[in-house]
Image 1 (cartoon, helix red, strand yellow):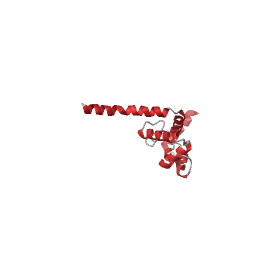
Image 2 (cartoon, one colour; image 1 turned 60 degrees about the horizontal axis):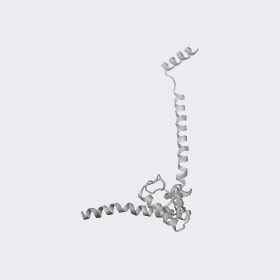
Image 3 (cartoon, one colour; image 1 turned 135 degrees about the vertical axis):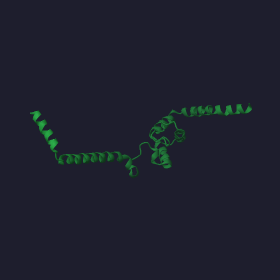
Image 4 (tube, one colour; image 1 turned 180 degrees about the horizontal axis):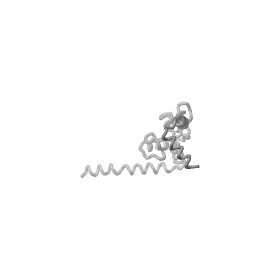
Length: 152
């Protein structure tokens, strides 16, 4: 019985600590506004297709808390972003800057679109040439003549 009480106490004490921590952090709306602003600009490293603001992954929560701690130390947005980029690379930014290492990310979709359009146009032209160069069989010539007579 004693062990059950200890286990129950440990299980239910976690939410009490987390609400206390959340209450302390909400006390400063300036810090929370900065965290919210940065969480929209930074990527969840686990989800990869979500911002930190959208993600509910434990790592995203850890990163938001890390941002809160840096904001509490009066670090600017750029200083916080620079710290996280130094630690995780440009991947942590939801919109990576345009530079040599990220050029494929920015230009890749447009290059693929142009290549796809060129590929389709080459296929269409090749098909037109093949169809135009095929002679009609005697049966097809007869059918064509009948159709032309019906139209007149």
